[in-house]
Image (cartoon, rainbow, N blue to C red):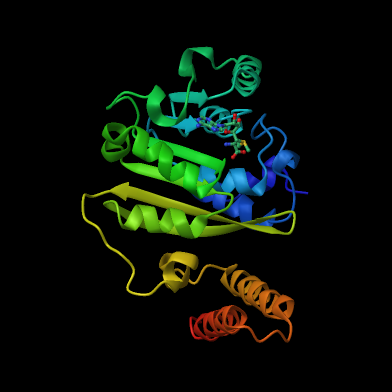
Amino acid sequence: MLLHEDVKKFEYTKINFIKYVNTYNRSRNISRLKGISKVKLTNRLLKIASLVSENKRLADIGTDHGYIPVYLLNEGIIDFAILADINKGPLENARSEVKKNKLEDKVNLRLGSGIEVLKKGEVDEVIIAGMGGILIGELLESNKEVAHSVDKLILQPMQAQEELRYYLLNNGYEILDECLEKEDFRLYEIIVAKYTGKNSPEEEEIYYEIGKKLIENKDELLTEFIANKIKKYNNIIEKLGNKESEAVIAKRKLANDRIERIKKLI
Ligand SMILES: C[S@@+](CC[C@H](N)C(=O)[O-])C[C@H]1O[C@@H](n2cnc3c(N)ncnc32)[C@H](O)[C@@H]1O
């Protein structure tokens, strides 16, 4: 059990502290940290929160419960946040979380789609987490003025990660960083990006599927991530069975080529 006294022993900055807690609680729920934050953050949410810079104005798009901004405000890491959601129910969840934590004077709650609820210059950093990669790309497209002007986009696609990387790198965004987080046996990909106006398409398809930054950073979950990918392609091959039609042969070759390429990444 991690006690408040134990934590005090470490002279970490707040962000490093989050990273420290994250390591020790990889597969557990952060709610055990009673007294440090009143809000429960799971590993995924905590990792996303750790990527927000100190003292920046934040927007959390598709905020639902509002846990991330409420946590960051409680910790004093940020002073202002816009919590937005397209649906009334989730926005009301966020409103009660804000009220419970007495943070009404530090937040704006907005009902609407994506970053359409934001004006240029209102926030420095934007989180879009827990949605599909294609939708995230569409939300960035829907208000380019804002998407292009913020310092940092923290994106956590639940699926279509490959499509999101493709969209970013071929539409003037730079991927500044990437990391993986594990929660309840699932690996989540988190992408940090910024608009630069310069396209930087990958020279090889494989890097849309397995982010280059994950390899460069030697992410501690990379081996497991890669093993999962290989398993996925082996399952495809298995399902194709012994059929020998032209289409099946092509699919089998594609899957085998991917496996060979993935194996060479690390
Ligand atoms: C699965 S929840 C994710 C909540 C939180 N961001 C997280 O990562 O745990 C997705 C949330 O996004 C909201 N949402 C879906 N489409 C949206 C859009 N176009 N604009 C804003 N919010 C949206 C949903 O209402 C829901 O609250």
